[in-house]
Length: 331
Image (cartoon, rainbow, N blue to C red):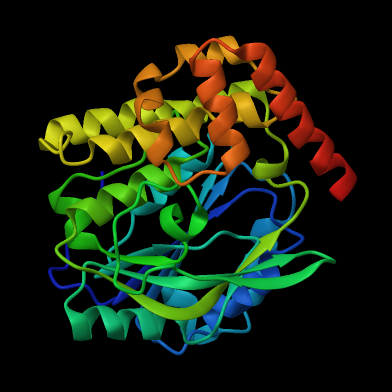
């Protein structure tokens, strides 16, 4: 887990963990935005997860133009690809800053992002500071994704605005004191698990209603290439969250929230035609079917879920086929 800084008080206000895997197409822009930050006291931990392209050469090339950052950059090279969870943990184990944040190597940030988040954390004595972000879908334009509640509320929602680490600055002391780390066998949803644990245990979480982070959405990203094995890996998040809440004595407090999370985790077995499997859906987290009526989900999905739960699978299949057809003609 995260090591204590052996220098006493850290010289860095913020540590940034950047997992790197074959990011040559985008990493130049990412690095330029990182090294151009208006906050001086930042350390950058790049963890190369067995890249086979020129990602690391590009990082060093960009760094050459930012000589003042030379001593603040650490590059950890690994020859074997072990996945993003292992990579994030390795980066976390090497940070020394007062606060920690993550940045994905194909994205970029506004130059005042870390200074703004850090100053707000200190001014408000907050353990976690969140901000909005911008989605840039290549060739299709951009849109801002906003926190729906400026007075922060803990909601077990898998959406990136809630669960991502790239738009959340976290006090390192909170991570150390609660031994929060990454589940190394979960490489999809690993950020949500880490993020929600920090949010639950934080003394104070605040939201800055401004978008600083630019999320580049490309067709090769993991969210666009979902296999059954990868999806089953995601579903593990439910049992790990259950274990965490049990260990902290918080299960009763978050019972409905946990069931909503479990429902979200398995819903692709209903929603996605290439993964649709009613038998698997019913077997996985059956306790999550108790509260379907209160979940904030689309009406067609709510109807289909209740039909499958109550063994009316032929009607559920018809409802979902209509949804599939609607999506097809909408493209």
